Amino acid sequence: MKTNKMYEAGDVRVEDVPVPRVQQPTDSVLKVVASCICGTDLHPYHNMESHEHGEGAAMGHEVLGRIEELGEDVTGFEKGDLVVVPFFYADNTCPHCQEGWTTSCVNGGFMSGGQAEYVHVPQAQGSMFKLPDEIEDDSPLIPSLLTLSDVYGTGYHAAVMGGVNENTTVTVIGDGAVGLLAVLSAKKLGAEKIILMGRHKERTDLGVEFGATDVVAERGEEGIAKVRELTNGEGTHVVLECVGLMPAFEMSAGVVRSGGVISRVGAPQYNDAPVGASFFGRNITLTGGPAPTRAYMDELLPDILNGTLNPGRVFDVTMGLDDVPEGYRAMDNREALKVLIRP
Ligand SMILES: [Zn+2]
Image (cartoon, rainbow, N blue to C red; front, side, top):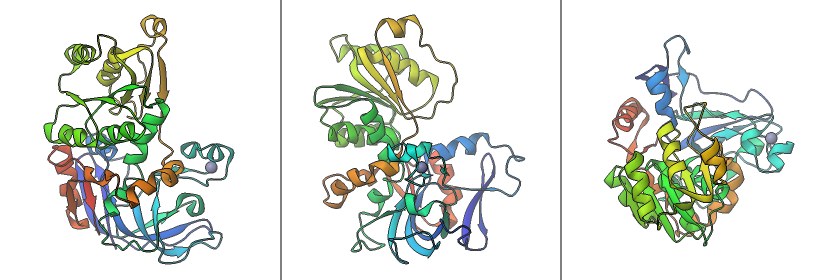
C-alpha cells in the first residue's frame, strides 16, 4: 500500500509498504477514507533531524476509515463500519478516561500512519467512534466528520476549558484550523462577542462566517491595544490561545480581563512563561492542554449530521496520497489552510 513517511525536515516521501495487520487482540486496521495534514505535522517538517527516524516516521494522526480487520477483543463493531479515530488513542475505560481525560489514558498514545491507504489503530475498542451506517465514503459530511478527530474537538476543548458561555466575551488567538474552530465553538457555546486575532484575511474571513464579531490583524502591543479598545479597555473574560508560541502567550496575558481565563490548546513551544506578580495580581486562571477529542465526539456529532455546523470548511485543498509531499509544502507556505487527503 501507499504511505507517507517523513525522513527529516522538509523530506516527506510516498512509499510502498505492507498493509498493516492486527497485532494485539485490542487493535484494528482501517481502510482510510479520509485523513489530513495537521498544523502540528509542520513542527517535524521544520525540525526533524535525519537520525531521529532512520526508517522514516509514518505520518498522519487524524483518521476516518472503514474497519478492515478487528482484533478478537474488540466488540460492537463489524468489518466495513465507518469510524473516526481521535488523534490520541485510548482504552476509554481507565480512571482518567472515565473522567473524560482520554489524552491521559494509561494505555493511550498518539495515532500515526494515517496518511496512507490503511492504518493500524491500537486500543480500537475505546478509540473508534462509529458513524451512522447511511454515510457513504463520498458524503459531503466526511470533511466535517474528520475534524472530530482533532481540530474541531481541540477548538471546542479550548472553549470548554475557558468556561465560554453566553455571558463571556472571548478573544481567539490564531487563525489556523484550530483557532477558526475555537471561534465556531465559542459561538456554539453562546458567546456574543468573539474577537479573532489573525493576520491572514482569507482565514479570518472564514472566522467571521464561523462567528467572529471582530478581527484584529495587529500583533504584540499593538494587537493588545486594539483588543482593549474593543472592550472598554478591560479585555475579554476568556482568551483561547491556539498557537503555542511565546508571543501568543504574551498577547493572551495582555488581552485577558481581570478574573479571566487563558485557555491554551496550542502545544507550547516554550517551557517558561511570565506568570508572576502581574498575572497573580489580576486573578488570572491558566488552563488547557491536549484535547481529549474522543470524549467530545458524541456531543459534537449531531450539529454536523443535521448540517447546522460545517467545521470541515477549514479544509481548502484536497489531495491524493501521491501529492502529500506537495501538501506539506503548500501548508508550510500557507498556500493551504488545511489539506484533506483522500486515498
Ligand atoms: Zn484510558
